[in-house]
Length: 245
Image (cartoon, rainbow, N blue to C red; front, top):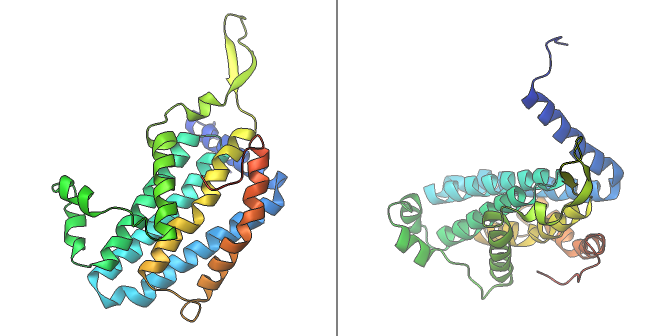
């Protein structure tokens, strides 16, 4: 091991790492569920890209978008576990945007050109790439997008709004604030609900069924089994309603 003094940045990374591991070690059942969710999502995204990416350039792009969305989804959780709700929810919105756009491109692969030029064709892009709220996955994704826009992209102070006084500064001239684990549960209740719409949209985009991917069966099984987990997390987040956001 290096005997160099630990840097400020290095110590921040180590502290975050310990916070995440500490929460997961205290909640092994929840960790098991999360592990299954992330494993299924990564397997689905990778398998779909390998199976269908060669069919067209658009299919390759959508497969890569799914892999990026899965990374965002996982990174979102990491921020939530260290009580950084706004960052975590912002990443969740990014994943939802990719799911929406990937779904649209698979409906009409000619839209890939518009998506690639979205910075130059902003108005046309926004008019075209919309959630299909006629489908359950699209409706859920739209609600998730609105929620994570409000408290993630435009929230900025969401974690702070959950803070309480935990002490005073050394000279007693100011107060110190902090969060307990309820703030983590507030983020988790949204993150868990994001599993179906984000990955469900991509599954629909690739027309994935049980006969095509074993990981899809695991995905559907997890979606069906998440209800009690979400209810338990809702209770920990101040006992609020367990209905879908």
